[in-house]
Image 1 (tube, each protein chain N blue to C red):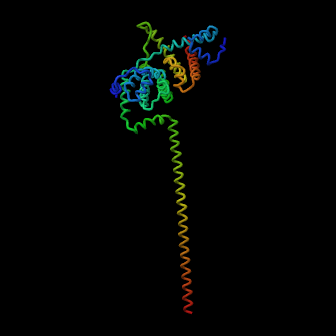
Image 2: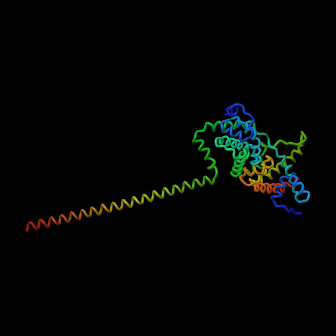
Image 3: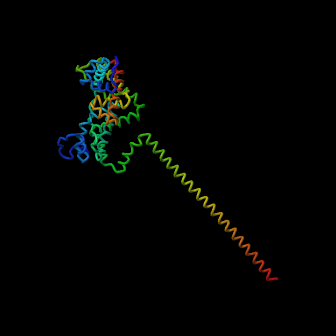
Length: 200
Length: 155
């Protein structure tokens, strides 16, 4: 299949939009699926990781997202922006995962994270042990504060902050109005500001 | 000093705090200016949360799953499409309830039919018994009339 998807349907001539690529996938063009995967894989998995805070689970859910995209190719209609549809699937899977196993995983999630740990990005090429520890503590506080947000607020904040989505797009993903998204974001940021006030 | 703007208007300004309208408002409103600075600090803190790159085996694993999907039979596809419904407790409970209700209705109807059959059987037995009684009575009438005829002949 990998061969088929990658080499199957001849050369791709720079498509205009993701929706057009998806329409080509619908028509049997496997290479367009590869392009969509390469383009959106990281943003989807990073969003999922920040939602569930477990990198292995995020990759597993990411595979399910793209598998569902592939499964739905025959019935795909470009009624909304492709990324709105993609993130709607991702959000749905993440929220389901959180709902199904929140209690069992809550403690784990706060303690774990070693395999998904971010790369330390500071100007000093060899950060001292102390600065590394300070960074880790601050990062854990940010992660903990975001994890403690209600699910919809968390999803809205992550899409707004890290994926730079417009309100209308977030509204499309969460199936609510733009004003509801603004309200969700306002309250979420208010909570985060209060919890992380000491870091300012 | 408390800001006189509505929550939605404040949200709009704080979430787009680099716009000209936001800058103008922050010059006049110390409360929003303070919140705006806190918000900027929060965004800066959130920027530190980077995520490692996706695993190198991600695509290979995904394509293997897609390959498996491509070779699925129709009933596997059907099962895959309804499986998520059963993953949700509400759906599973709903389906169990519907099955239980259907079973109850079916069982109840069968019991009613069974009772009707018993009633019919009882009526039939009574009718047969009555017929036999009638026949016995007729036979006795015949015997009596034969005796009377014999007696009249001998006289």
